[in-house]
Picture (cartoon, rainbow, N blue to C red):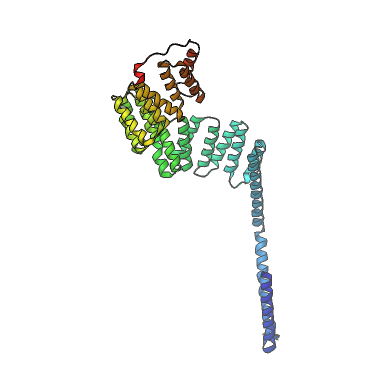
Length: 422
């Protein structure tokens, strides 16, 4: 298109000059030292244009001639860079394919001509790591750091990744902490450090990071909530305090919105029960269940040793009106009836829980009650069904042992329990 435009312009100019020559009879006369030159005006205009173009292109040719060495140098540099980029690309392809030895060779082949040698050395470090050449890997990482910009976060993060792949958590932690001092707001650094704290069980350090993780939006809201709950549950659990007072001191250090999570609250309640503080736990469970129904809390309500078991049973039966035939609630009601020595009512609740596909521990409770009531054959049946339902029930080992005892002892006459007929 450009040449067509130039051609049209040239034709128009030539046509205009031709018309001008035909209509204008002017001429040019030059006289110097006895010599006279005379010609038409159009001829002189054409000659001037030719002279101008000749001088212009002559000067351009001379300028290009003088700049040729520099141009050749630039061309050679471009060729070397293209070659270096191509070998780096080939090496990265080999790295992705798992050809570690060839990848290491390719990425280092023309590294002196690379515009970003840091990338070459990082790729070479990965390849050497996969070849178990850890000395070479460390040397490449050092060279990558020397060729990095002022911020060498990429080099350090690669080093952390390779250290973690070797399960060198302490070394990776030291590297990340150093990197955090230089890049305190770097999202990848924060995320990697948080995950490392999680793997190492450094709960206090992880909890301290949570506000910063939330500000920087390192995790999604759901991921951060899960991480926060897990951290605070572990914060309470790994070294249970010797007294309820120490446990409560830890509890009050937890933010209110975390305390309201059922998982965290359940952990706290279980620890209180382990310390024998049922009186504190009972109203806590009732208040929590008003906010949110939770089967684990309902189960715990049936095993706490409250000061007023009749009141506990009355509260639980009130829940039955609201929740219907919840199998865990039926199990809890059966246990509370046992504490109130209401054997027949307890049996009814246990049987209702079994009919509602209740948990395996329901079978154990019912079997134990039936055994006490002298119905050994029926007790053995429920022991078997409970063991078949799950092998992870907390009573499964005891139930299995008791089942063996019942199978190898002669049948006894049923015991008479007056209270069992209530």
